[in-house]
Image 1 (cartoon, rainbow, N blue to C red):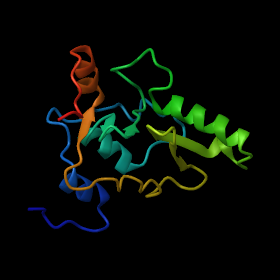
Image 2: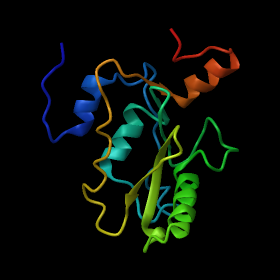
Image 3: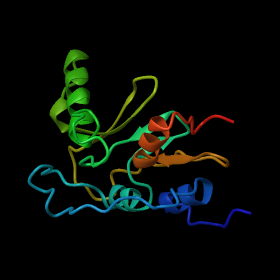
Image 4: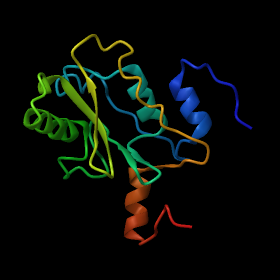
Length: 156
């Protein structure tokens, strides 16, 4: 049975619907990342990374980390890579402020998920309302291991 949660606490709502990976998420040196990411990260993204880490929701929605330990040689696998794709796409589409987009994820349908960093970071990243009963999140470290073992984590 689902536990009641504060409707304003989206991470609590998400964890009530989608269990975090058994091994947990990742920790990052957020202060150390400030030079690379001067716009910073909202607290709910930091907490999401601690609980879930980078990974894939139901083989559909991917959440990118600020730096990627699992795929360090893939420049598109972290926030910087998704942000670069978002900026190029926004420029092509005539968006008026592509430099203010911060990409944090993508979908299998090539949608880029971003936040607009044109205002204070406080509570502006309320975008993790994506769970539903029975949904699963698989951490990237587990996805890589499954792929190497030729196991489909989404299969029956």
